[in-house]
Amino acid sequence: MPAPKAPHLLIELVVCATACASVGCEPDLVVGSWGCVDAVECQADRTGCSTAYLGSVTVPWSSDFEEGLCDYARVQGYCYAEDGASYELVSSPVHGGDWAMAFTVDTTEGDSHTRCVLEGQFPSSGYYSAWYLLPDVTINSGNWNLVHFQGGTLPSIPSLHNLLDVSVESTEELDPRLYLYNFVGDGITRAMDPPLIPIGDWFHIEIYWKRAADMTGEVALYQDGELMLELTDVRTDDTDWAQLYIGNLANNLMPRASTVYVDDVEIRETR
Image 1: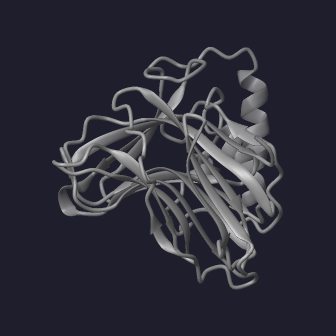
Image 2: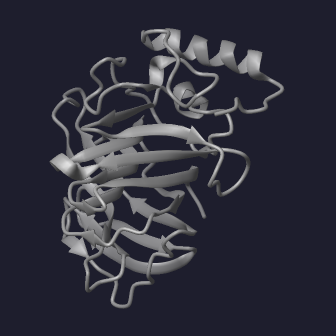
């Protein structure tokens, strides 16, 4: 794969290497990246990476992958691939610019997952979004997750639990569509008349998340700018520290190997 054209390559190498040195990771190049070192390549549970980032997540934040994984490295985020999975920077397909991320899983042996993770104390409410392109998967009889939130209570963050998921539902009889899972609220929620996922084309997933441990929380799911479903007066978060996972997790796809493409990840307080 040819190296991305970037006039500030040397500057980015210095910036990202400095960020990685501050979190104590090994200085090996990340597969698929060009300017950042291994501060962003860990295991799902952070083995091989730094201690968790405990500070506030400053928004707006975004990554268009035009600088590889530097946007994640700057905020002490990380990426991982486990159980036969892999991730890499690709020049095609892309949503915008020259680069996107490809997250490939292989469910031959069951669970397989690869994602990039941002963590810290998230705002009390905000919009979390990314552009996705999905392959033609004929059968998904298990869990196929695209966006995942989990969290814990400081200072005991190693004891994490699930908070919120946006996943794909599809079978031989059911065309692919999104659904929401609120783990601390009402469980699975499906839209009454959900739009189908445009397989092979880019589409936009956006989640509004108002965090609340009592019945004042809110969650809304948008696809391509249109409101799919909305939950109000619900519990949405019983933690004060969380992680946002963007990528590909599955356990029973056909074909077994599947690549999901992601571009233009954003977090904002307002739309």
